[in-house]
Amino acid sequence: MMKPIQWALLALTLLALSLPASARMLPDFVPLAEEHSPAVVNISTTRTQERAHARGMPDFEGTPFEDLFERFFGERGEGPGMPERFERSSLGSGFIYTEDGYIITANHVVEGASEIVVHLSDRRVFTADIVGKDPQSDVALIKIDAEDLPTLELGSSDDLKVGEWVLAIGSPFGFDHSVTAGIVSAKGRSLPSENYVPFIQTDVAINPGNSGGPLLNLDGKVIGVNAQIYSRTGGFMGLSFAVPIEMVKDVVTQLRRDGEVTRGWLGVLIQEVTRDLAESFGMDKPTGALVARVQADSPAEAAGFETGDVILSFNGIEVPNSSALPPIVGRTPVGSEVEVEVRRGEETLTLGVTIERLPDDVAARRGGPQREQADPAEPQSLLGMRLENLDAETREELGVEGGVVVTEVIDNPARSSGIRSGDVILQFGRRGVTSVQELEEYVAEAEPGRTVPVLIHRGGNPTFIALRIPSE
Image (tube, rainbow, N blue to C red; front, side):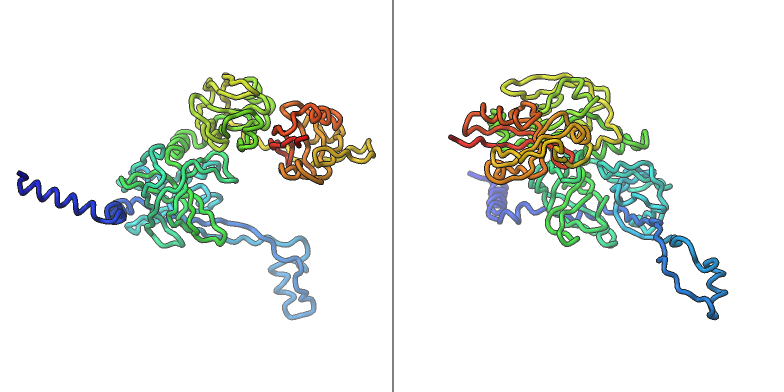
């Protein structure tokens, strides 16, 4: 027979189970906001800029204002437009990292600032100095002269789960210590303008002024730094992005120690492996990062990487997609010797490579293709596109060894595969293309109905496209 205390426990259990899921699971954010808001700061910056006066100055000759005009602007006001200095202000957020005044914020909050003013929750105001900043991760570290400050504890973004509750504290539109909550909607999100940050995507309301503020988990630990929003209007539309705290830890450690950030460099340009490309490479499913170019004098070139290799794992870490690789390589210590698993044709190889420091300028050479001027003949049609050879001068300008230019896309399969006029075809089925005639031979040998990987040069960058050979 059950005792009264057992009956009471059973009743409470049944009552809890009968409640709606939202009532059982909705967290209480009040303690989090009260405890951790004091460590969040408002940051206002001033930027000094210049602009020129209009050149067309009024003519005061012969008027009572002639002497006054010459006194201030010189004789007749001739010469180029005179620069005008003016100041612009902006707002952002940050959080106190150490009791002696180190503050983490977003790089774009303090970039180019001539003055940085930090407002604490207790209404104290300090002028801050920049310790270091890293534009590639959009993280900056600043310092104020203060002691015994409230701080936030850094957590782990690696353990974060999609669907987990998170809380943001910041100063949207200048409103101090505004609190918004939501869930993690995705991890490892790659944005078009970023290569080295696997963003945390949330539906937490973030607006201008929130940048640099903390993203907290339910334990009150910082798991990200709010950095960007996706918006067509300039306001919040349901998507916001935070820099994972694991990356922030690494960046901040280097900024405190060296004042700058050093990243690992492999030296490959990569792209996503689509379903069609996976089929063309004989892969069971789309995975990994496809090497579209091996950069000259790079660690990858020294290790024997080839265009068309698919990187499956790096230093024992699986590479599920192309966006996963740059952060992994970037966090690898310079000088490390790592093993990289790649798929090449029908084989899986392991290549050893020594990681070097990411150069300051690794931008690819730009330039559009030009037509072969020495051959005025009508462009040849092949696979639904018209093609011409490239002259040696154009190849040197583009930095390619071979290739033929697409002068017109007229039909499928070129049109349906995404090939455009102006593309330069460099490879067909992993074989280099040096002339239209050579490409015709490769096409004639290709199996009808098969999907073939085609490497093209577009807008200064190499890209693989999957092209299906028409069935006979």
